[in-house]
Image (cartoon, rainbow, N blue to C red):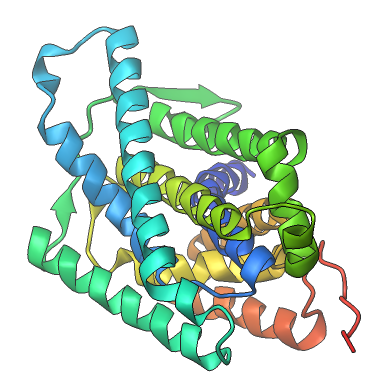
Length: 303
């Protein structure tokens, strides 16, 4: 029982990372029906941005809790801002002109952008794994025989905070209403005075910023990063978005946690080598038997 609870906690922490990445997939797809396969690499870029920012901070001189918290907040915000800017540039330079093109064109372009980002990161940090600074105290807690550390709590706390903040933003703000209107009917939204180009750019900014946050928390959680990390993490986050219902924000969060828990349980009770097999089998089964996902609705055909 203790092992089960231990893996459940690990799965929730891992699922928080997947959920943050999945939100970017589902937001972009909900508005322009594009699977942005470069999104996973933006997540890795967030880890690299965090590494670079942390290298500029004299971490050895910082010991108090409030100062460490301030460093973490500053790094998260800066990494999110930089990734958001990258997301806007990708949309403006690579996707905007192809918005009305056949669907294969933006899909191939997304794969091309992904390869460009991977090669930039390879040139920037090399082909080896890069250690991520562990500047937080390595404190462990035991509750009912289950051990977890501050990093796991931080990952789950940050993930939940940004998910709740995104939900409030989308459903309580004017820009969020513009995003929902654009997702429902782009032409009608434009006729109602909504700047569709600006709304789509903001969607890319927010989705990419959340990927930047995921990059920071995953670096902190795993203690290392690699320029190809975004490939597998992006595919698993995409699986989470499809599982929850692509285009559904709440579904992306649920899917992320489910995939994280499934991966942790598979690693514990079957084998690490089978985690990807199980996760992507879920993707195939969902696409075959329930393409709309757990919380998605089957959209009627437009005529």
